[in-house]
Length: 474
Image (cartoon, rainbow, N blue to C red; front, side, top):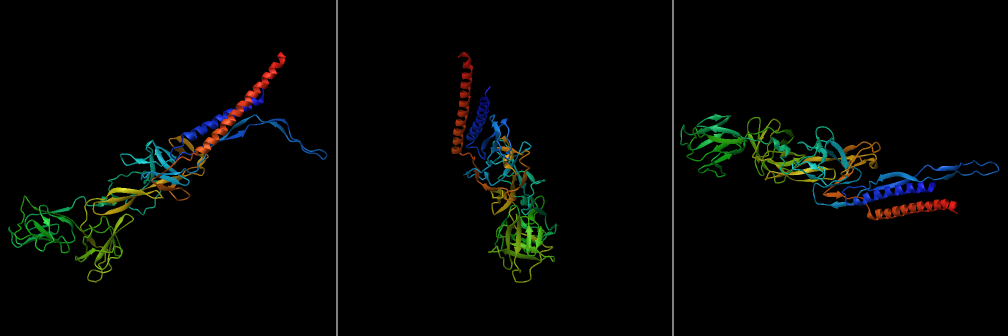
């Protein structure tokens, strides 16, 4: 049988495979993060009719005489060039700019993807909406200064949702101290005194509450007037004295005087004139420092938060923590009170900051904006993990726009975006397919002509065989 028949058949099969690849490319022209493939052909083992000979002193050498036996599929290569960017305006969408892949957990299996059209499920997990695979990364606790490590306890699925409480606010007092007074008595160092033993008392005071914060008395309201009126009281935080109106009667059981307050607290840490606290004073609140001797030094809010003056303080949020920085001197210019070993007291919003919005930067850090209705602060929530491989084209496509490593791709190096050659992240954009329709249509024409030419070889070979058969008839 003629060799040309089998050579042409191999050409037909290979061009069919090329058309399959081109068809898949065109089918995924709008698939997010898709990478086109190309087909290359190789020659088969040739049949040698005559070997090569070496030249002699009197005669030249001859080349080998070989007949090719067709073509074979050389490779199907993934072209990992970047696709164009499409702006979506959705803050959970992400695009990788450079070499790298998102890391996802798909039912317990780690997969990698260039498709960054993510969303959040009802539990707040950042996920691929088509498959439910969860985006992996580093999650912060309360300290924004921690260097992310993309392994261990803090590495895993990224989870956050609007309404989440700021981790620092987990230290907010969930209940205030309540002192109950029935007549002239002392409770936890707080003393109720009066001019006479029984009601009515004119006037009456409550002492021992210096530096207390968030003080309230059910059924009464605080007033800034010099003299409280009916059902009113004044509170001097510096001296810790509550003054009641003229004619105020000493409460008796079973209706005691309930005074709720937050005692002064020791700062989390102190550095020079800066105290780190778990929650900030309300805007404009006076902060009291209680010295070792028991005296209270008041500080008022500074107009310039960058440089508090004498007797002033400023609040700054640094790396997710609240810092109260006091002025160089006290209000009267005297030497400032050493912060070490002291306590601070102030009014604060006893309501946690909750997540209102978030943004994602080019290194994949998800930063949340938290508000308690009075002030706002920012805190790092998580950092999206990015993987890189020595040979991206060696990855195996397993469907769902997911890849898994192979023996020729190398192992994944997982870390932060923009580091060690990894791609950076562009938020609110997604990467489109890198399929170029003009290239695909041109390749389609070439494949079609190649298929037609191989078909013609089979036709002509068949004609020659028919001529050979017809020799007997003649």
